[in-house]
Amino acid sequence: MAKLSKDEQRRMRSASRLFATQALFQMEASDTPFEEVQQEFETHRFGAELDGDTFSEGDIDLFRGLLREAVSHQAKIDQLTDAALVAKWPINRIDPTLRALFRAAGAELLTRDTPPKVTITEFVDVARAFFPEGKETKFVNAVLDHMARAIKPEAFS
Image (cartoon, rainbow, N blue to C red; front, side, top):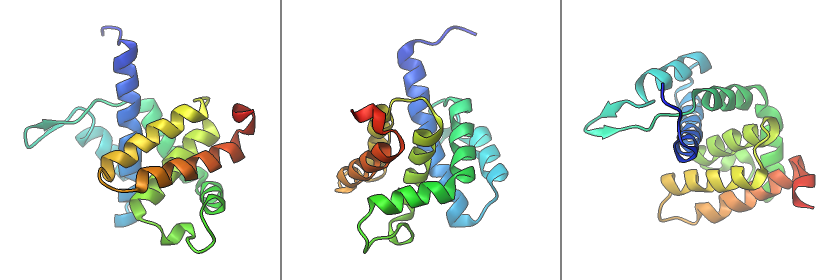
């Protein structure tokens, strides 16, 4: 197998973040078990062609890690998200897509060595993919910045 360029590796990581957000949303919306959703994405999304469109290949290890860690640390991630939201908007009242995004991003912030600013930028891009016309990207940026400062304050000093 040919060595991937840095740009190809970056695109694969970005695709994995998007896929992880979609998978977490699907798990919640359909009450489907983790393993079943993970398998479905790996089999039918990574590099798959659907209606003439080809899905990106993803970084399988990052995808699996984000899913596993988001599920394992969901309570802590949800607490961090709640702390970043105004009191009138607890996590169970926000859009389920955003909830999935915060869980995937929170998993990366909590368990990966990715610089927090990279994680924030990547997940703001994921938000833009779901909400291209909306104000959600600014909201996502603000919430993730708050979460990142709580998890890794040393990265901002």
